[in-house]
Image 1 (cartoon, one colour):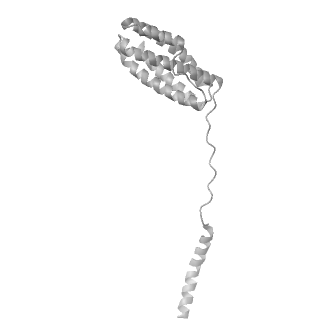
Image 2 (spheres, helix red, strand yellow; image 1 turned 90 degrees about the vertical axis):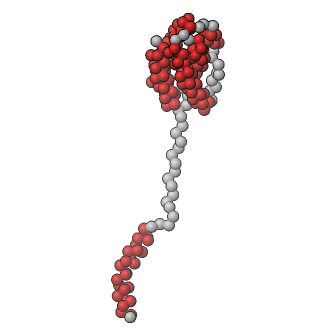
Length: 181
């Protein structure tokens, strides 16, 4: 019987040596996790960025008010049907812009400027084709000016959030202009 166990011991010894060798490679527990990378900070607003945000906010507020008027004052169906889309899109943009400005400690006005409020009040008294002419003329001229501001922001800003907003609004303005012509 003793011979049998020596035979088994000699047979199993390479297996045991292999297991001991493998167990030396396995360390107890997990290795420590590498440190997390620092969170990417948004680029701070430059004075040009802050100026852009304020101009875009003013455009949003004015066009939202005018599009709300267009729902009931326009004689053209295309303008009346497009106005809820303009209100929805620019309200979403205004909310995004407000959140972004707040994170950069910039407070945006909630109402259009006095000059734009006079325009809104003047258009509020127009109906039908008179409203359509004035609204279309103002919309085309103001968005043409805003396109220049948007293009400048897209090419010069380091803030990716503002570049995305500017690009989105540029696309929407082009769509609106093609429909209002």
